[in-house]
Length: 386
Image (cartoon, rainbow, N blue to C red; front, side, top):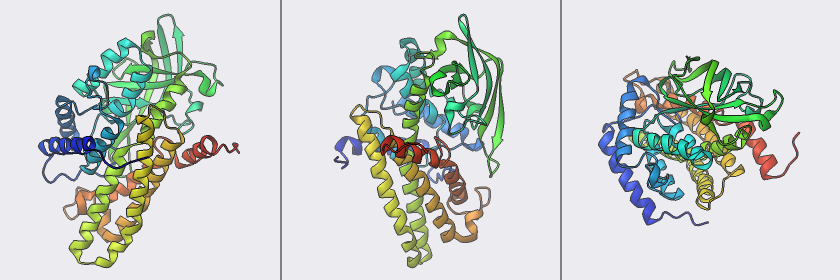
């Protein structure tokens, strides 16, 4: 495969850089969250940026033009997202654009695509993902939230956990069981659900730095119109796994990794300690390897194929590479690495400590490292399950 940048990729890089320069403060340091910025004080900036990108048809650029996109190639979208990662862009529409959109394009009805895709691309509509549960995180096929068909509606009861951005979202893509209790992946369905539907309660879950991105969501006798079912009943695991392949091959990570690596190298030069720069050499290799793995996922998308083990390989490598980079960042910056953005003495706007914490989370979201290794072993190498 030839991964050399094309003229179109360089053109979209130039365009997104200009758009971000117009919308972000000159000294913007982001937050260090992976892969999205969620500090309360950044919310309005993120909304404004999403609207700005939407006005230039850059919010969902790879989508078909009739849904508010530009029909960009997978490689052009990679270039755009890598630039956004390097710019530490605050995003509220990560789930809407990167996960919900592809599923609706592939499996949604004409009406669902018409209503929801245009609202995301043109109005920057914010969605959350109601998948994980307390007893069903990486093993989603064991989830217990149940949707029971009653005439023209489904009645849903259950509980979701680690639901990113549910507190600011208007819509949720929900995975629930419609088959028998022991049906595993054969009895799951995917629904479109307004977050303000009666019976939904959202409770904040704060992380180790007391930031609020995650939530617990309770669903009690929540009614969903039958037309909000995506695709066919009990086929939801097929749709959900398609969504997860998009979630696991994220070019934002390669950009964010590159930015932190470059910033650390600049700090070493500033301090005049050339020796410490050698500590960054393995991470430079990590970035090149992780980028190539991500580009392989992009190449499969470009060929009209859905990556499977390739997405897991990219996600596994990049999330663990970020952990290694976080360890080195703390060694290089000493005690200041523990200072958050609230302390004026912090380096890089407090991104070091937040990147360390987020890199731990990154090995859990979208499937733990153990799950990724199982996928690679069974689907990639054909090994039997233990």
